[in-house]
Length: 246
Image (cartoon, rainbow, N blue to C red; front, side):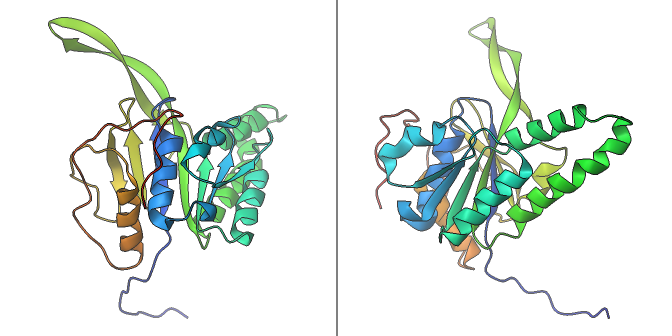
C-alpha cells in the first residue's frame, strides 16, 4: 500500500566518482579524499584494476589493496567490494570501474545472434554491479577513465594542442548514479560536473586535499560546512608525495 510521509535526510554514505584522463591523478586524489574521511589508512581499501598502480602511493600510509588479478567481470568487482565490507573498511576506492565496462563490451561482442537482443545478457550484470556500489553500507569512491582528445588553444599568439578528457569510459548515464562527480584535468585541477551535496557546484577550480574529504564526511554526518575550497597549492602526484598530516 502506498503512503505519504514528510521528507527527511539521514546520515549518508557518499558514492563519488572521479573522472579524468590517464595521468590526471585520480588514484592519488581518491586516496587523499579517503584519508580525509577516515584519518586512518588502515580503514581504506583500494580495489585495483590498474596493474598495481594502487601500490605506487604506499608511502602515504598503510592502506589495503585488493587486486582483481586481471578478472574485470562485474561479479569479481562485486566479490571484491563484499570482501572489503566484511573486513570493516570505512572507505572503498574502486580504481577503476572503466575496465568493468570494457569487459562487458568484449563479452557482448563475442555473443552469437542478434546484437540488440544480446544486451539482455549484459545489462543485468552491469545493473547488479551498480546496485552493489549504491547499496553498500560504506563510502565508495570510483575512478573512471575518460577518452582523450586534443584541442587547439591560443597561447602567446600561437595555436598549441592540449590534451583533454571527454566522455567517461562507462555505460551512458553512469554519472547519474553518483552523489558527486568530480572532473580532474591534467594539471590536477578539479571541478564538479554533478553535485547533490552543494559543496562543489559553482565553485572555482581546486585541488583535492584531505580537507575536501573531511568536508564530504561532515555533509554525510549532517554537519555540512561551506568553506572547503582552498587556494590552489602545488600537489605532488608522484611517488615522493608527502604524507598528509592528520
